[in-house]
Image 1 (cartoon, rainbow, N blue to C red):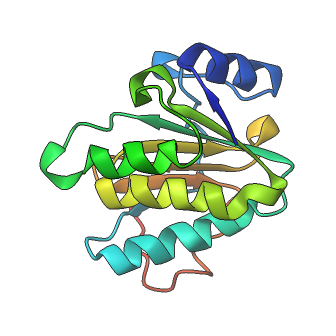
Image 2 (image 1 turned 135 degrees about the vertical axis):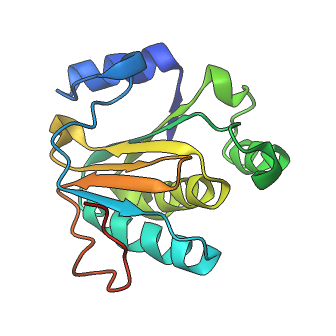
Length: 160
């Protein structure tokens, strides 16, 4: 895993043909699916596990956090800071919100995205070319592109 500043994450996106949209974050347009993030934490973990399977065979994928302090009572920054420290990262999240994983690090990437889902943080997961996109919102919805959740998560609530 390589941890990136916002500028480095944006540069990676531009170099890997990932269009940037609002606030210089990955563009979410053209999503295939919009869904509700479940209230139940076990279902959130299952949802992330299933969604991240789409990235299992990618040579690289970027996990980029945003808006992590919208619901302070529902998060525990100490847990996340200590988790990142176990990877050698000591900078504050605001200075280093991008996390670049290679194809052998799917379990690591999935763990990072799981924390975002449990804490209801905005989180983008994209591959080079943005043929696959997972976005989780603090507003308790998500969107995907190129990620088959409808067949993998039978209880998923689709938003029309």
